[in-house]
View 1 (tube, rainbow, N blue to C red):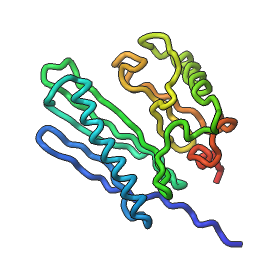
View 2 (cartoon, rainbow, N blue to C red; view 1 turned 180 degrees about the horizontal axis):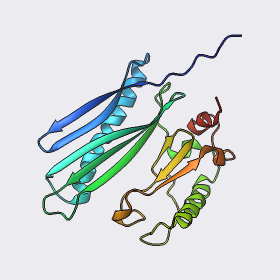
View 3 (tube, helix red, strand yellow; view 1 turned 135 degrees about the vertical axis):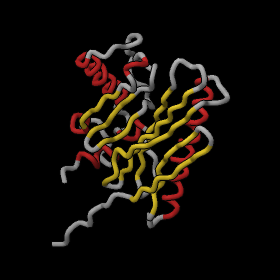
View 4 (cartoon, rainbow, N blue to C red; view 1 turned 180 degrees about the vertical axis):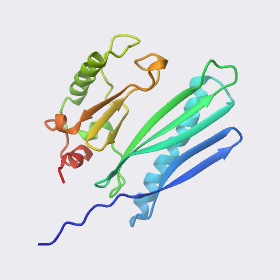
Length: 209
């Protein structure tokens, strides 16, 4: 009996964007046999790094920063799925404190497809309502302080995939006070099997092998 070929993780190279007061580390994938897919994914990552830089200037209403630091975390790198988070911290002179922004990207490393939250679920499934209920339950159970009443997630809510969990998260100040940090809500993929797209990344993670 022929053994199935294991799907190996992709190789990640750390790149650095550096100028006065700014040091940003970000990932680029290397060694993919399909160079077009590799280029597409790497361009998307770099564009998101640049977008976070621009968002800092816009949100903090300044044209200069004393310090800006960028970093990344690889959340999933298996079964042809790459899910990662990019963070950017920036401090402007005389501001009370700095601001950290985070964005996550999830790709199929075979096709180069970037997944949005809706792509993880069956067409027509009310994933927004289902996920909102789970998040509300966790808010109650964990006694998370909110800025106001929780009205549910958005259809394109921030997320990443970590092993066998979908992690829904919110930006600083989005639903909670600053001191809470990024409120994150891990949800087991097995609790989503009724609505998840079995051919998508959650379906890949739910396979027990």
